[in-house]
Image (cartoon, rainbow, N blue to C red; front, top):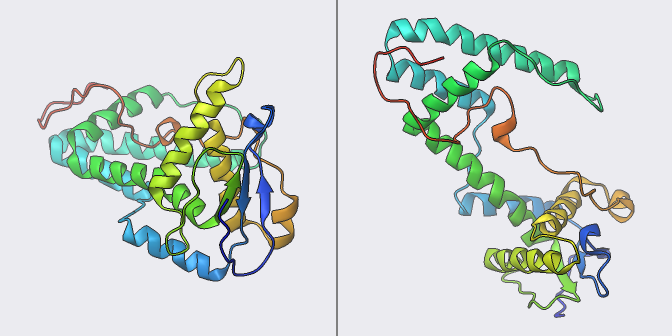
Length: 253
């Protein structure tokens, strides 16, 4: 493994628990994060053209789409239903904050509002673009963090590279593919990106934890996964075939 000069501090060694059972598991070296690294991360995000739209922005664009695609009567009939549904979900989130096993969200309009949101999303290009921006951000942002925090690796048949102090994103993508293959080689396992997700999670911890916590933090649990935005009630989704068309007809809800 090629060694590179660091800005100071000890490296943290990490092995994903999903690969810990193999005879010679990979070991990842993560370096301490500095304020300079945090500034660099923001610069990299700008260079990659990443943008993240808030839930409030997505909801506002959903209403704009509803108003633009259907008549004023239809908009008047459904705007209040959407807002009421979103308000109910926001209240649910506040009440369930910190609860280990929250009760499922229930609302009489859930299915109808999800279907309506999907129809608007498929037919309204500005909303689709915002969702595409968020999808690109969610996929790329953790990789940028890893490109800064990863100082090397051992027991892995993949060349570690750095360019101006940053692991290139194509190298990060090669790492993802390699870890998927390694996970599939474990008896009883199917191909999975779980090891890569765990490495990304540990890299993110280097940015969010204090120095003492960096050494003592545990590896992420197999069950600790980031929920998909399409599953979160109140957010528009893009799955399935669209039936929405610009018209004055009442949406089928």
